[in-house]
Image 1: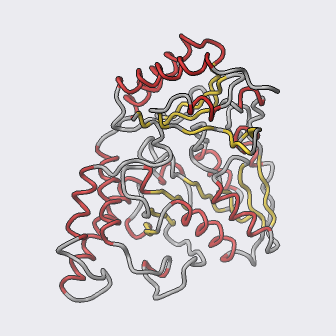
Image 2 (image 1 turned 90 degrees about the vertical axis):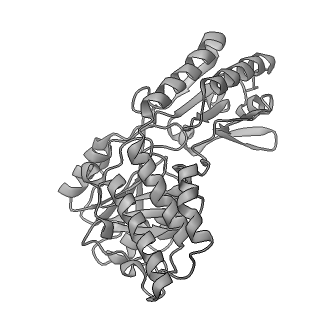
Length: 377
């Protein structure tokens, strides 16, 4: 099996698993308990908080643990909207955000909020000027993802955050795809809030974290006993949190961007050599996640390409309904022609990816694509 779907989910790293094991067996209980076992768990949780804070360039008290990226998106967007509803009800986001962002905004629209979706260019890039033109006196939040999950385009978050500051608007970025792959230091991005998902950086599924700038109070998504300074109630899952902390430390210690870029280029060059112009690069040519290659196989259907490569695990950029594919929201926003968008496939590499796997993937794809009939318009 050739796994090239690391943007969807990563395996749990061995060092992460080892960090979790003590809290899955002999050490158990509730980290909020004042007894000896509780204190041990509290130390583990606070150690992880420091590890995540170090990766993000934040202070430990600005880190709030949660269940993952979707909860984080919901919490920040709704939390800001409810906390600042007396100041304004206008939110700016982009047309290519994750569904957790887009659907949170739709939910708020049903409650009387107004949402502006700024366009992207053909590379999936948000022009900061398009954001500044939409800022109004009643704008309370700008929510732009750090890097797109489908095509990998990296957004100019620091520039957009500066626009937000000048307008007195809060800035939030979804960094689920970028954290652990490129730098996500909040002190350099200039954001007020940022969210990450553990299973994108070799921690388990079901754990994530939010950075909430000191002094910023959001309306809680979960109401309960007031855990984590009242920002996120609920008993903290100590083992999962320890795992996320270990994953953050791993990402801080081992920068694999250069190796990922080399392997990504090997994959793209191998496909182009054999398939030529039938392979079209999707996403920004340079400002792109080092591990992400999204291409459109001209005149083909992405799902059919992958079906003809039974050992290859990757993701299509189009959804199939009955007998006709549909462009993804991201590719539609980028105005990618249907003959290319229908054939979109995202290959996302991970730390375990080898040259041998890349070469095997190339071999399967260049055998499959010529054998497929061109898609009908």
